[in-house]
Image 1: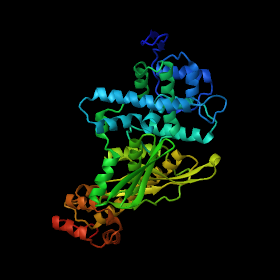
Image 2: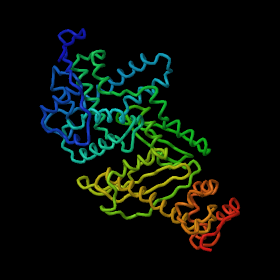
Image 3: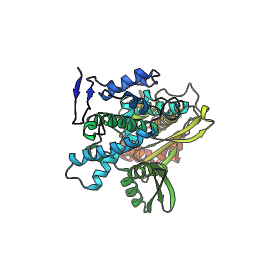
Image 4: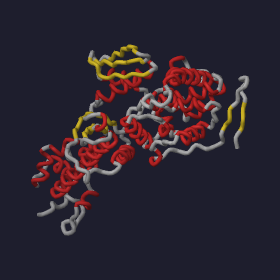
Length: 451
């Protein structure tokens, strides 16, 4: 059922459409070419019926679509309207927060990354009118990446958000604001639905702030961090220097957002170790279509979650070819408790596929390292004394594995370089290694297999 409301603006009213928002799935990322259908769909998403539907039509039109006015004027006012509305919200919701914390909350709720995710969440990316083929590819790749995310990514995820998605949210918000007679109070319920879920203080505290992380990391490494700014064409630019070297940079309408993204860029490029050994995985440096793992990105994400490792970090290393035939090479980095694994994938026509190729390389590399480890363990077991009587007649590596000395196991797990060491070579030759002797000292009686 629909309800009509008046908000104190003479001659003004709007309709709230009582229609539940349908979640976006992987099957619903294709554009909707029918303008009338697109306008109706967006009104349902907003639960708002436009008095001047031409405002919404303009809000969904990119400058590459030359048959009607584009969204740039609306985007201009929408940026300010959303900023003020969110400022009011955080100010009233958190009366005890200081100016700095309020600024962080506002920035988190109106950043390009946040607004772009709102566009995908509500399916607005399907209704953009444009004539730029590369734009569709970027938007689709981002939408699919967002669907794989868990908790709201306050500071951005694996793929940087295409600016057009944030622009669309701002222009649609502006269309509502203008249609509401420039009444911010009347517009806020629609804005709030458009931005849901809003980033709260709890969410912000659960996800470390990139600038803070950068300074803490460099302080541990005794490195000097300096962030500088410039402004051009309505955009703020932030530059991160570490010990005088330019490491990261980013741009955004809001200075605080530019700073956040520049810090995140610097953190990724620093490939910080925290004392860990960095290993380039090249077991499968040349993958073909048959060896690539379907859904490797998702599987790698699950592996990291189960092992309580941080999320994998992807980067686009190379971009080749003309606009109509782009090719990409991506890399991925996984940080374990004591090691960082890094791998490049094969060249692909889509960023998403290039990232999947890199994820495949890491997964196959992990599988290969496990096989090497198991092979070395089985070789060592031949020389390890077993405390079980009669084991020589029914010896199996899996039986001996149950009696593997905990201290020795711990050494093997911690020392990742063991498998390329002399001990590993000795294990394969049948000679007695230092680890064997350590085990023998713990188990002085028993037999030696093969004697």
